[in-house]
Image 1 (cartoon, rainbow over the protein chains, first blue to last red):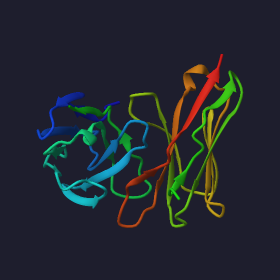
Image 2 (cartoon, chains in turn orange, red):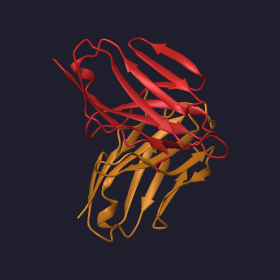
Image 3 (tube, each protein chain N blue to C red):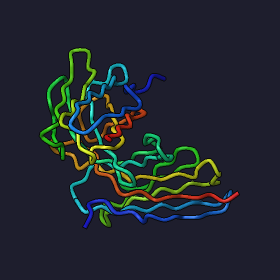
Length: 114
Length: 112
């Protein structure tokens, strides 16, 4: 079965640089969530989209922005990178917006900020 | 107090035994509950989800939910060394948001 695709899988950036992470949800899934997982931490919700509109926003820094495109893929844009942004970034997709829908996680992008 | 609480472990069980993982949550309005398995450096893999009181079984896994006690558990029967991983409990509080709130995870070690 098709899964969530994320690219790139690994990314190394310098402080103050920008990064763009991409997420391709499972086909026919219209809801996308972004989570950040720091070392030894649990995943923290950043932002979500449903039908190309932002549906919720969590602890996402103002330096980060995201959007969902007409083909339902999503991009997380991160600017003025800081050392503390080093983490695993997961995208999850769901077949619909709602409490009773599973969220399936992609393989993640490991971002290292030097 | 964290919204979703789990014992960090490690929980060590012998191969073939039953592993019992527990989770409590603070938001009484929480609507659905998920168990994810995460190997080190990998992404969370959905194992079970439950939203009604009682038990839900899938193969070697049984999820149990008690909303009155705000408690959800995961039982793994016939534990295998390959089950050794961190198990994350996640709660969807519903309403306008459908984000998952995760516990810190329980590290399970199945000893051969």
